Length: 629
Image (cartoon, rainbow, N blue to C red):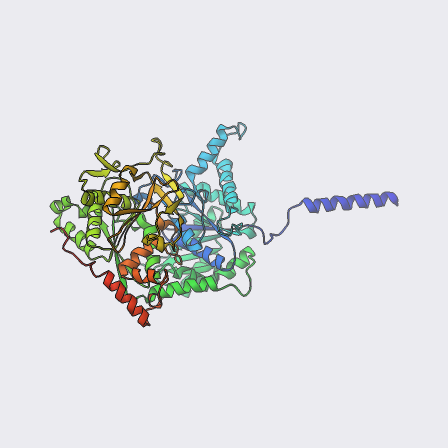
């Protein structure tokens, strides 16, 4: 009897230990949830906006969301890309040069991502090769499967847990966008990695959203589902089953088309979402939520969504979308650059202008002006292009010269800045735009006609722009002053300081190699150019202002990178306000938008007084006599 009791006690002890050590059979609310977003048929279909919208909807439900973008190219990062090759290079707080889609994630979700949130084939292979060189694989043959695929999975799991919100909370949901289209040879290792990953993290913690094109040929006028069927078939053949199919189309698809896709793609009709072209991307999260996406994710991933769901964030998105549609008044900004044939080259700049125009209750119209077409030589080579470019510049309400590299178009940018200064037209120069403004001022105000940047002319006798001291010649990637830096305001009467609500120190992101030569600062200041913001050492000039001008501002940093739909960037907001003739009233009210700037209806005597002040201060901004004849 005693022996039996001892045996039963031992068995019970072993069972208890086994239960304690074995993994749980079901997921808990604390488990990380992964949502993979893939694309089919064609690239550039809007996966980034779809992924960002999914994250926005889940964040509105009270969940902590992070994002990862996978780019299947061999480059280590996007730092050395031509803007024509892959669009703009987006810069993060930690100096990471990444794909522009990460800018969408930050803007939609109001989060701060890190360089590891952008995975490239080059990063993964570099990581694996470094481990092999250190002997971490103990002499094994290093292969795509399992070593590359394992490295991808480990990277995703590690980065997904890194806090990205201001509250420093651990994320609960990770949105992963796989660049390219399903079937691309470059993306195969990543597809295989996620085929394995769905079993590694358990089915209830992983789901796949497939974004596919549903074309509508004009000859027939009906939506064609065959491309989507083929895309889903290929995805399933590679081991991934879509839990949600987002159909991108020019026009809204019918219920019959959705049922057909459901029937042939082995999903329920409610798992087929329509996302047709809309006037504003602010509509995308709203349309997706209206189609029941929250309920689908809550059921599929066992998400702890509170009932009733928080609605405040989605209401704000709805207000933005409605406001964007109802705008009547228009503000025109002339964007003078060298990559004007591709909007993606200035993606963050355009978004920052849109945020500011929306805050000012104005529709934004951007005139893209090729800087080369403003140069005197163009008048000889192609007079029509020359005069059209100058007509576009002069008819703009404000002028923006964004960042860039190289000598092409520099003289055209300088000519545009000279026109803005002399005609008192609102001007904002960003990075290279600030440097061009300094060169223009040196030539035309100080009188140094040979002034130039050492980047453009290394032999110039007046190098007003010089290479950064800490820059070391060598590899191109990662050699610039990158990431978030502090700027200290040195005066209280700066217009831009007022736009930053009188902050003494601000933090903005940088991406440049050259800066204003400190040897000439005293000469510039005597001539009227003010250096109102510097770095913490006082040696780097970060912000310039021209006192005798309604709004003539240059910044060495890139404020567009941290502009948000509901928190516009102060330098861009200042440009748009000045272009609307409302900057004086905005500053008079202590940096608050008036009711008339929030709505097209309503007025008051105070507003009329402020409008009168604004009109008086902007009265001299229409002088077109400075246009080259």
